[in-house]
Image 1 (cartoon, rainbow, N blue to C red):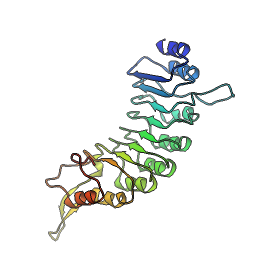
Image 2: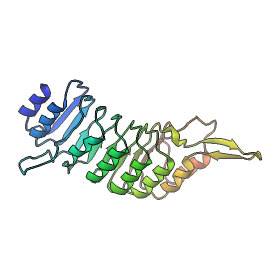
Image 3: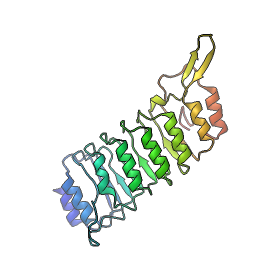
Image 4: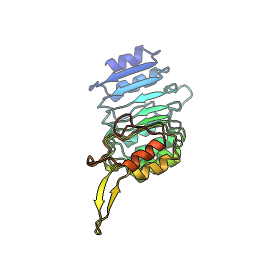
Length: 252
């Protein structure tokens, strides 16, 4: 009832911030989108009953969606599925989208959202453990103006996919990969049959592409399968040569 009341009575609303309102349903959010035409920022954090968010398809000139909407935060809306993309298609001014911890979302969502909202500047997708390098490829090809990307805790991404992202998305300035341990940035020492020791790790592959990127912030914390007994000096020295100084371990 409170969500419906907001939509019906606060029609001049420009910013909405709600968090962990477990009882709010699609109906309440639909009323907010339909009536609050001046909405610029909307946060529906932890609205677990939502299965869709957005104004839907505009059918007549008077059926205005909140095209002023610039920021949409859907963190923890665990009921959302890949099909929710359709109702976001009219948000032509949207620049910042957060779908972190929307656990049902897959590569299909990313492929669709990058196609219908190519103007995005900021995209947060923490804990989307179903997405793969296919999503990174779509981002690199379609989001030509993307400034920041957060794919922390996305455990199916690879160094190969990240290289494609950095090669294609030249506008990217901030990349957060916290706790993507599968990247195994510094790796460790391995010995072959001849007794020769060499270093393995994804970091050495990553720095080759970083030479040509515009990244100003890179979070590689907890991107290790095991904490190495010694740091990979070659990796660290190359990062330093490229201007990436560690503020703390693995945070550049």
